Image 1 (spheres, helix red, strand yellow):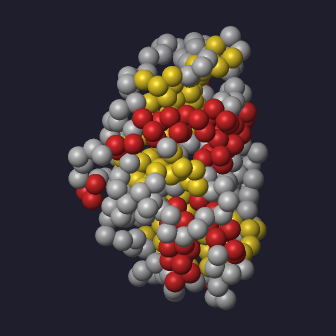
Image 2: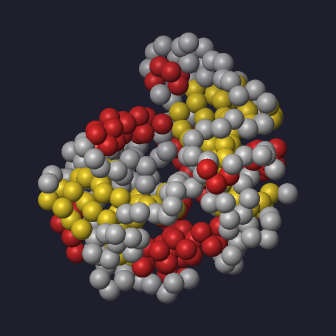
Image 3: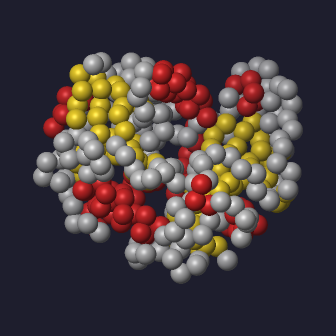
Length: 339
């Protein structure tokens, strides 16, 4: 195991030993290879540089309590990346090869998988981009799929403290647009809004639907999860929301492990003040508790989660992280061990 200060790792990039690369040319993907070279060389006119033809994924590898190295539901990342590629007119990287690349990358960098109990994890970043020259507005003809990994510290050092978010005046995704896929361009569009939010003292943005601005969608990089006064877990439903793997897993855990009623439906903003807990779901933090929502100066306070993670949110967080770390038995197919 690498001699890193695991307890003090930040959530940032750190170069590891090897990464996976495969190229698409003449209508087919090559065999793929592992490499120690962490640089990318492409044409100055590459499709990704001219027209943002790129998509990505994010997942983690962990050491479990009994010392195994595992990943969490990588099949869903493979399927979601396939959906992203189709929407962006990119060739789909075969899902079985995606899984094999995960295994190869983690195995080649197992010294960077943090020890159990450190709070740190090995973050994997698969991504694909148009690599051949494109000057007219059209899809590239050649592509590169890559996957690297980097050890990252806990998203919340010292525990998850409730954050304060604002209702955003910008639109995250258009109706019938690309909000449901993990396209790099979606995140580029969110950068101005998040910098502005930070400058105003907020941690994140709450985006409303672009068509009517009456319904809750998501933040720049996470799905919402709400809890009602009678402990029902509610999450917004929309065709322009990215289908978070963490959120889907939490909803299953809420129903099957915690015995809670769950509901995925349209959530109107004017009902948010009636919820007692709120969280943001994503790979990096699992759940970020939201304590306050600022609506242009009017503050909505989550009464069961304004000063610490609410009881239902904490139960869901503890259960899902327990499954990921091997403390709680996982549903069939959720955990993939890396030998």
